[in-house]
Length: 118
Image (cartoon, rainbow, N blue to C red):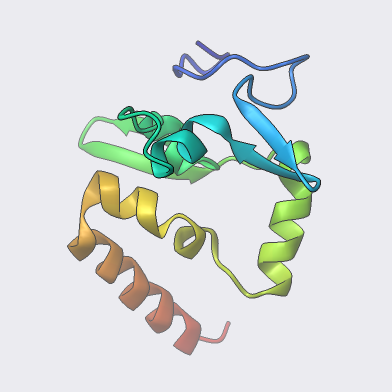
């Protein structure tokens, strides 16, 4: 449990997740790799799958908030360079949790917001 009261995976030296593995300088989730390889039946927890989106309970629903953390800065910069919004990077996780209709609505809202120039 972290400072916000959220259930989280253990960290190594308050940095990366204890289940991270590095291949060619890229961090990967060992649980996810094993699941996708068919080595285990357990899919990583939703909180991990959605990261860097954190779920915050509200009285009438749940807020999805972006958690910006310095150890993820390289990925954030790459996403910006490749014009990959966080929600698209998390398509599989968002669809797993909220379904394809929810994800389609996100795409629609994103496109509509792009039409508005402030």
